[in-house]
Image (cartoon, rainbow, N blue to C red; front, side):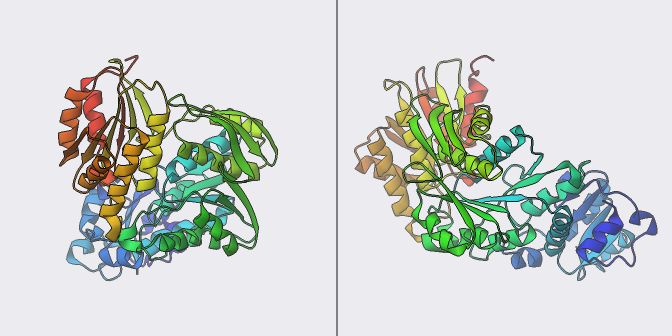
Length: 487
């Protein structure tokens, strides 16, 4: 994409832009001056932009990093009109695209590129499992001949989604290189974040994974969370298909928000796409019989936990809407891998096993992973759970942590360690439930030091925590001190 075209699509003023730049190609798009590369277009985001777009918190003003972006090779910068004449920016006036709001410009550019491309979009949301479901969906489609544009990492907000869409015209790509987009759509506040995302890329298929008590600090009630997630279903294209979790009552309540076709997936309740004859006794693998409207077959998923099986069923439901047979779906699922830090099973040469689920945590996902640990493998193994505090749970945060501790104790864990602040309540709840072998650590660094000395042959260790708690430090410490099997 040339600078001239980008300026036109986002409605930028370019009166003072150097004529030489008009026909230069943009290599990529960036919102971080530290990672800008040669030929990239840099968007200088400001607090006003973030607030209008519904982001929580205080952010650095990107205009102060424009010079750094140019020093790293940026071809031009998108700046707000009320900053364009700042003294430090005037020296770059022939390389500035001037807009009223840089985030709005980014989103507008992405929307117009999407409109010109105009191919199917799969939108995926849920309180947990979005990234895994997105990866599984993209993998199944890709394995069956579809050229897939997908969200990288967890790029699922008002910045990440448009940056993903812009990959249609950057990194050496052309819109003609892709047949379908599989996009995560996340939210964390009551500011209609998902509504904005579906306005950028209206989905042809919308997947609702689950509703759980996350972001309660900002949303207040689980009903508010469900309403925010339902914006995906409300934003489906005319003729779009809603993919709904039949085992989640709040998700099934979203059916009324869509007048078109719906397809359900589940385990416990009747569903269009479902699993039966489930065998989750082997850690890192689930065997099941897959049922779809197009037929049924035996399937294997090389992941742990029923929550991941549900993610696989969601992916199978999407694939079914693309007329992919159950046999082809099962073949693709058999070669899938969990994303990093999301249920990754690590076998160590010293004879112990770690499940790295350190990317995120909420009460529902924590208990699901704990049950995975207690139900799988040799009963003689010592099962250790290292659980970080769970963030953004609102006024009920302490009771939710205590309830989680009680459930962990009831699940049959041998050892429980809590990490940081509210994890003290996880420990308290577990002790109320009769689990006495517990410890609390003020930081992940302290827990990391302790586990290196504690772990022994035969142990099965689950490490899980909200991203801000950095329980991945515990995994890193183990990998630094012990070799993986086969290394």
